[in-house]
Image (cartoon, rainbow, N blue to C red):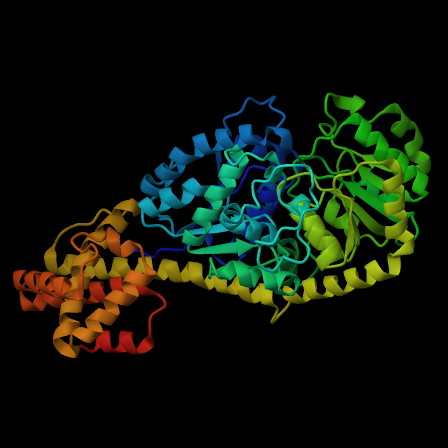
Length: 609
């Protein structure tokens, strides 16, 4: 068998929506900068929009080992792909992607690339099928859950809420306190739970998807979170009780910008991942406005509102007397098409009161000195971008994690105001005036302090940069395991003369677990003969407590040490003494692979038996 140099290769599978794709593309670029091969699974629809409105191909062209793999999202091109049709998008994408992923992991996928065996899969946390499919092939999964950690912790507590009778709930009293989410007992209410919790029906599809996610997350090799320790350490501590291996690498847009700046030794050019054409003229308009005088208004990439709600915001903003920059997407108003999305009243009055556009370069807008406040839907990307820019928020959440995000913004981080569950022009006017005048100094002070902590986290020695470097090291370590195993199989090939067909990575893992389990039993047998049964018992306990892969091994399923000893002795008797050595090397490698982390003393003793 020829020796191969195997480079780390990660498949990235985002949820095909603006926010998750934006985060995952930034992660992909960071991984590529670190020398990791990346295959990015993109839907045809998303890819066309990125090609139309960004320089995505030229940005990634400098990474020869990066590639896009495109696939249909299973929907007709005229499907709106908005928040109210999320389940259509989710079900169709899973139906298409599940068999494709299996194909990619076992045979290199539709465009076979046999020199790039998969080291691990990084997927959005909502995709429970990824973990099952990858583990069938012995490939680790790291989930990148692009929701806020405070919301993820609520997801993980849903079984506890059900047991306590706090969920699902009946009635309209949304201010009833929630007591079964550790760390949030003092401020969490029913109205702050994810929007689907209000359905009152535990069989609701979105609730079932979330419960499935809570079952799968703790089984993954690790979880990437777009946050930083100074913002959410209490919540992260709770999540670690169920999912110990967390990589808190946020704010990822800031980490991305910092790393690119270090690579180029200068400020990097703006790198948009937008699905829409960005209006650059709005930046010129901002240049003419006074310091911190403008309210930026955007409700994200998915929210669909009514015309009545739109007019309430219009009157509230105009009556506040503050200038505004307002993003109204072409598909943002229910039942309206094209130019009718922006009512005539808004079009006629916008020159006096503000600037209305279809889409804006949000990171740049929030960083502009003229922007003093952000009226937002509280999506997690928007929340973090506002925190990094030091811009206080008014939160008008609509779904998913936005309800809990808005509560944390107002009650925990003190960087904004929560306006959930109301859309009234008088309330909006008062909120804008509170943000921009009455409570301005208080909120700006908190926002500025949090912005400093966010920037510190991605700087040298910062918590997010440390976690990102650890993520890179862990991926490369996974790859070292594969490379070492290839070398060991080369040794076995030299002794036994059989040829291994490892162009298909799944076949490699099949051989690895088959022969590894045999070799491990021989190794444990040798350890027992040399160090006594206690060492063998310790080894089995470590393996049994830390790995499910042990049960995938052929011939060793829930064996006690005595049974393993007999099995190993039998295998030893079948081979000549001179060929035991490569089996012991493979067995030791197999044991270390399954039992990481393992005590240094045990490794030393195992190698010196």
